[in-house]
Length: 127
Image (tube, rainbow, N blue to C red):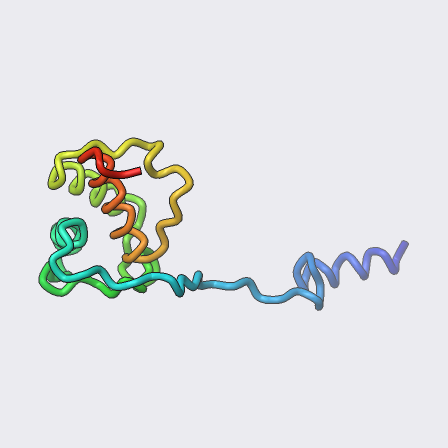
């Protein structure tokens, strides 16, 4: 019984997985993220909305496609909702909760792709 208590105390101090624990991955890698083409209306609309929500960003030089929304651009949930509302206003579309389900929005490039899909759906040319 005394041995069991020592084992439990040791596991608690070393973490539940003990000495075999490995550190968690902290960054998602998206190798397929490509830079938006110059003049892309979805990318331009997003850059303008980002500049409204995050004034330190210039719409003329948007973030890199690989920039992570949370880690690099400091876009929290409140700012994300402000971006969604700004996109709805600028593109004259309605972005439903269902549009966001199952979408992996990690990087700026992911968000540009999402905006393209929403704009295409609103124009009747999308999936």
